Image 1: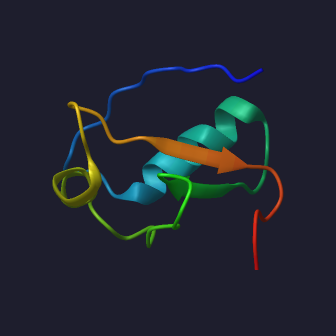
Image 2: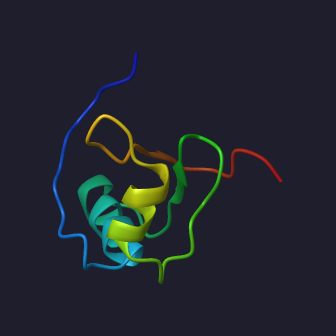
Amino acid sequence: MSSTYVWQISGTEKFAKVIDFLCRQLHRETLFVFLHNSFSPNPDELVIDLYKNFGFDGKLVVNYANTMAWG
């Protein structure tokens, strides 16, 4: 069963801050983080740029895995 949580972050933050936040919340040193279960953005990308290009319905959907999902 999956759970859905909603968090907000300033668009001027880098995606690395999202990754760091998830690692802290999940007590993990590393995570594999994806948008739309399909690609992992560069940690230096601004959240607003990712949202403008890949967001929908007012959200930017971020998925994660503890292990690499594919090679």
